[in-house]
Length: 159
Image 1 (cartoon, rainbow, N blue to C red):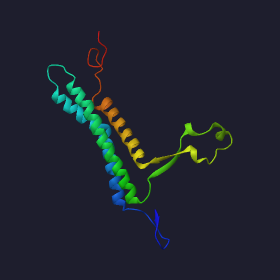
Image 2 (cartoon, rainbow, N blue to C red; image 1 turned 90 degrees about the horizontal axis):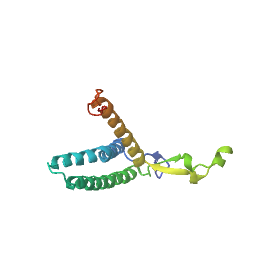
Image 3 (cartoon, helix red, strand yellow; image 1 turned 120 degrees about the vertical axis):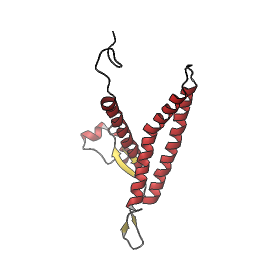
Image 4 (cartoon, rainbow, N blue to C red; image 1 turned 30 degrees about the vertical axis):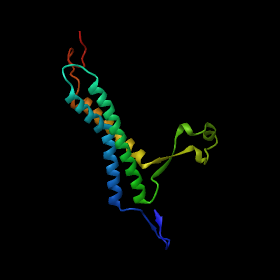
């Protein structure tokens, strides 16, 4: 929120611009956590030959790392663009329990600013993306591709 010269309060950026930047950040975060590893696993599976070698696996590790760096830089740029569009620094103040003094809890707490950690919009988007990725993994693991219950099958007890 900004105040113009006449003292009127206005919000920065249009709702569509802010929503699209948040959506792009969420898509980028999901690409970082899910798309990047799946993409490089797919490429590695296409390069696998009958002779075992470490080359495809080294390529996969380097590829995942470099793609993650590129995606992270893009997410950082989107976060800065969001800050420019809104005209604010997108932070939320939270108090983390491990930074709170036990003495403060006994005496009703304090207004100590050191116990507060700024959390930006990008961090919130990344946490949401990780939650979505973990839920997708759980759905895939337990619903889409469950292990067969028969002994001797993949994932079952072998005798």
